Length: 230
Image 1 (cartoon, one colour):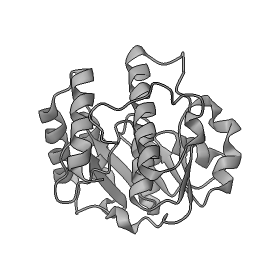
Image 2 (spheres, rainbow, N blue to C red):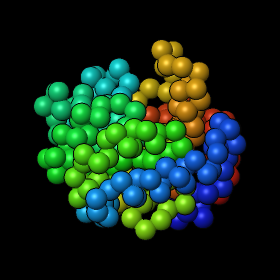
Image 3 (spheres, rainbow, N blue to C red):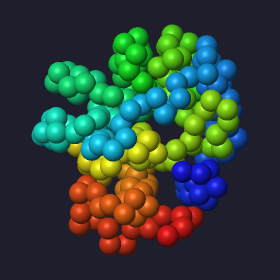
Image 4 (spheres, rainbow, N blue to C red):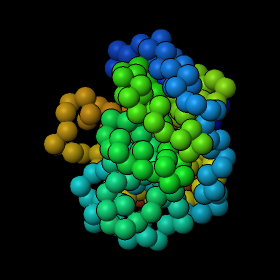
């Protein structure tokens, strides 16, 4: 996705949550500075032309393991990576803003498994505590602000929908969504708003792809994405 397409949606997200763009840009620059090298080019993640399981961390993940096993590749959001590994299932990439499972981030990068580490306005402390210990050759640095050399923006806002946008950018033929639950009464009010944006962004992505995601069945009516075209 070109940043020119993403930017109006990004501005709508910022306005909805009252976030400042400058904080995202400072986090982006910090991530670039903390890496001991340029990071991993996401093109090195070979998931093109296959079915990709975009794994979320909802409780239902344990019931959706068949979707994971049947997929050609797995891109796991946040702590879904640790949970899948506990089931003996490998992941091809983890997508995280370091809010959860930092030990899994370190383990994966030590093993050479790509981790898309995301910088945003309020995770600079976590970037400082985790990123220096990582092997830069296994880190895909990402931002939701304007990309710079070595820091990528494929679209998306939460770990889960960013994982889907990443898989799309790398040429996934089909996306499936184990471990996703938009209506989770156990989460905070802010998290529910973020899940609402994840839902809208996936709706935008499926229209861009000409594909219908099963996770959105029965939920499309009334969905729209401010700032998006089409």
